[in-house]
Amino acid sequence: MSKSGVDIPNTKGIKLGPIWLEPGINRLNCMGLFVGSFFTIGVLTLISVGTNYVLAENLGIPFSERGTIAGDLAFWTEITQILLFSLIGVAADRIGRRPIFVAGLLAFGLGYFLYPFAESLQELTAYRVIYAAGLALSTGMLATVSADYPQNISRGKMIAFVGMLNGLGVVLLNSVFGRLPSWFVDAGVDPIMAGRYAHFLVAGLCVLVAVVLQFTLKPGVEVSVEKKQSLMALAKAGVREARNPRIALAYGSAFVARSDVVILGTFLVTWGVGAGEKMGLTTAEASVQATIIFVITQASALMWAPIAGLLMDRINRITGMVIFMLVSGLAFSLPVLIDNPLESAAIPIFILLGIGQISAFLGSQILIGQEAPLEERGSVVGMFNMMGAIGILAATAIGGRLFDQVGPWAPFMVISVANLTLMLVALYVRRRDPGPVPQREVEFWQRWLART
Image 1 (cartoon, rainbow, N blue to C red):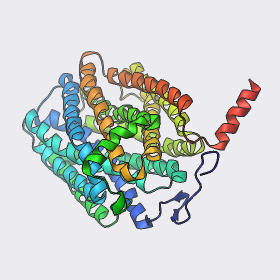
Image 2 (cartoon, rainbow, N blue to C red; image 1 turned 180 degrees about the vertical axis):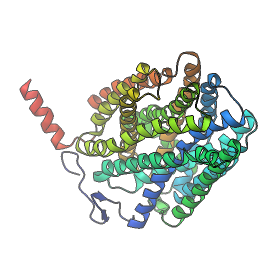
Image 3 (cartoon, rainbow, N blue to C red; image 1 turned 120 degrees about the vertical axis):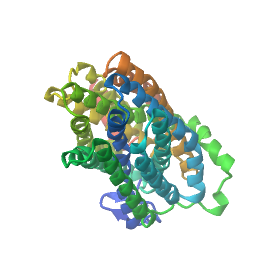
Image 4 (cartoon, rainbow, N blue to C red; image 1 turned 135 degrees about the vertical axis):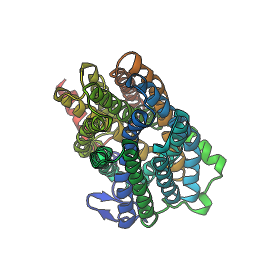
C-alpha cells in the first residue's frame, strides 16, 4: 500500500477490463457474479408489483388500506431476514458462498410460485416469508461475493458495475414482467389467472438463474484450515468489528441505504397503482403505469452508478459517504412536491430519487467491502445485512402507516431525515478516523486550505 493509502494491484490476480480480481478468482467466476447481480435485485423488486396485483385482484383490498398492508408484509420480510442473516454470514464463512446463493434463488422461485394462490392475508404473509428467506440468502451472498472478488484498488469500479447490473436488471425485468398481467388479460385470460401465469414465469426464471450460478460461482475466497474459526467466534466477529468506526459507519449506512431501496420499491409502486385506479384504470393497467415510474428511478440509478463508483475510487470513502448521504437525503425530501405520481411533471423527482437511492446503496457497499476483514468477511457482511434489515423493519412499519394516514410522500421524508442524520455521523468519522486517503484528495484539500 502506498503512503497515500492507495492500493497497488496484486499481479497474481487477473485483470478483467479495468477491474483487478483477487488471486484465485477467474473470469467464469466473475461472469457468474455479473449474472447474479443482474437478476437478483431485479427479481426481488418484482414483489412490489406482484403484491399490489394480488391485493387488488385476489383479495379485493381497497387502496386506502394497501400502504399499511404493504408495510406489514415488508415488516415480516425483514423479521425473517434478521433471524437468518447472522446464520447466513457464519455459514458463508464455513461452507462457501455458492450453495447459499443458489438456495436463495430457489427459495425466491418457490415464493413467487405460491404467491398468486393466496386467498387471505395470513396465507399471503406465509408465502412472503418464503420469499424473504430467498431474499436473505441471495442478497447476503451477492454482497459477500461482490466484496470477495475485486482487489481493493478496483473495489469502487466493481461495486459500481455490479450496481449498474442491478439497475439494468431492475429496469428490464420490471419492464417485461410488470406488463405480463396486462398482456395476459388483453389476450383474454381471467385477471387472477393472468397474475398466476406472470408469477410462474418469474419462478421459472429464478430456477434458471440458480442453475447458472451453480456452474459459475466460486464458493468464496478460501481461508486456510489454520485460520478457520469456530461458529461462535465467527458469529461474534460481526459485533466485535464494530469497534472500527468505519465499520460502525458502514453498519449505520446499511440501516439507512437498504431502507432507501425498499421504501422506493414498496411505496412508489403502491402510490402509482393507487393513482392509476383513481384515474379509472384497471389494476393491470395501473400496474403497468406504476412499473414505468419505478423503472424511471432505476434507469437514472443505472446511469449514475459508474459516476459514483469512479468517484469512490478517487477519494477517501468516508468523504464519499458524506457526499452520497447528502445527495440521498435531499432527493428523498422531494416527493412532498408530487400531487399525482403518474403526471410527467413528477419525472425529474423520480430521476433524482434514483440517483439518491443508488448513491446511498453503493457508498455503503463499497465501504463495507473495503473494511471487512478477509477471514471474517461473511460474518461482518452478515451483520451489515442484518442492520439493513433492521432499518427496513423500522422504515416499513412506520412508513406504511404514514402512507395511509399522512400521505404517500411521508415514508420518503422519513428516509430523507435518516440520510441527513447519517451524513453528520459520516462527517464525524471522517474527522476522527478516515482510513486511507488518496494522494489526490490530500492535494485537493491542501490547495483549498492554501486559498482560504
